[in-house]
Length: 89
Image (cartoon, rainbow, N blue to C red):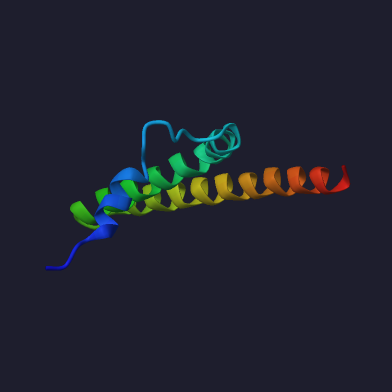
């Protein structure tokens, strides 16, 4: 009989006492605008797939992609400024 040890490890890996650190929460909060923009982009793409091809759907997808890209650029600019400031300290 084969014993499956990995199942036990996977269950206990998320014990209630294992909470995210403040740094992890801060990183999630910092990245949240980009995450939400990506969600909006995927929603727009799904909506475009579910309907007949139309110019309105295409514009909605393009706008969502631009917002996602803008959010990612802003996130990169923030993290680049932070890492430069941390390296200088």
